[in-house]
Length: 178
Image 1 (cartoon, rainbow, N blue to C red):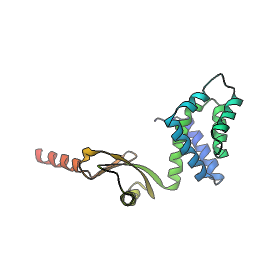
Image 2: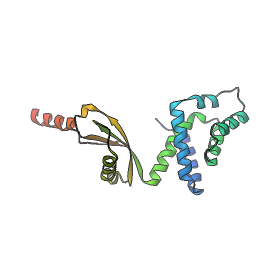
Image 3: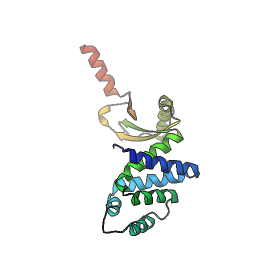
Image 4: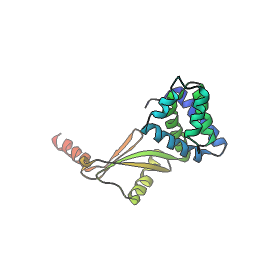
């Protein structure tokens, strides 16, 4: 998803406020929950865009829908609502997530494998590849891809590490054919 300068600024502001108040883990957890909810159901954003609802009612709805959310996140939502920037919310939340992960030395990684990985395999992959991208650990998402035949393909950002059997066979084929 492409991000605007506006969403980057809102995310940076929320990140700095959370960091300054020592609430980064709590706000990050709330951001992830809200992001997951918005990705699964766009109803919240549609509700916030209704012109029939006053700003006061929208503020009350946010407080009612997110009763346990950190006040810093709520305040950011109110500011975005007042500035008519709620369409930027998914981008703001994603950008905040990236900032929080970066501060914690975590990178998002996708592992393509022929089967679900064990926790031990995830840990080994994380420790083996995290330092290659300058991070302390990887948050791994596994995608099952039977076309790999064996091995794994790992994607961290725009970097791909491919040790799959299908890739090795393709490389061998290119070498033999010329």
